[in-house]
Image (cartoon, rainbow, N blue to C red; front, side, top):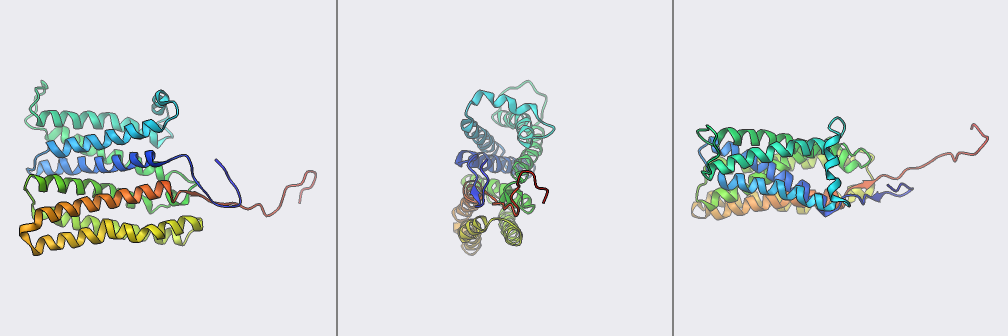
Length: 291
């Protein structure tokens, strides 16, 4: 790590690392909503399969970032100190439970005495929340980068993961021709909550000692993030209520935009806003002098 008199952009995580947070956040959020939808009588298979794919894809892409990929097994040896280790440990039973639920929904004989995929889906949904929390703490524990260590990033990333997953869930539900009104209400609630969390996060950073380059970067991306992930979905949902005949395509498009907004946020947070603060030494140490 380079330190100096000017703030420097971190160079350890690139777009591949961002893809892990994108895939992990979207996939875990989707698995949560898939499990809740199953309790409400909605089909589990397409959403569960998509959630499993997103989580696995995110982990695979970040694995490609490792210089010596087979050393990734060392990840599992520091659960007492590393949120990355905890993420990896949670990922294994998460993917196993989601896979069982998906196979059960496909009516693949598994030799299990289960009346429905509800139990493995509920386990997968619970573990998905734990996985999402681990991912959030990976960023929040990076104390040397104010954009990531700001405390208000925790609710922001949590809400973003749930919103991204729900956006994909809306697309799947609309594709199969089912759109309970409660889903549009949930989507509207999530995008409003994420917009509030973003405003609080940006306000907290602006009043802190974060590098000017970090704040400038985040303020520059803010209009796009608010428009793509919040304003446009809100307008589309409203139009769906006004024109019920177009509700399915409009709501599906709102879900896509809400998800893309979260991806845009994470890509910028990781690749453009992670500045290492500058430091200053007011007194230069001189050998033989105490002051």
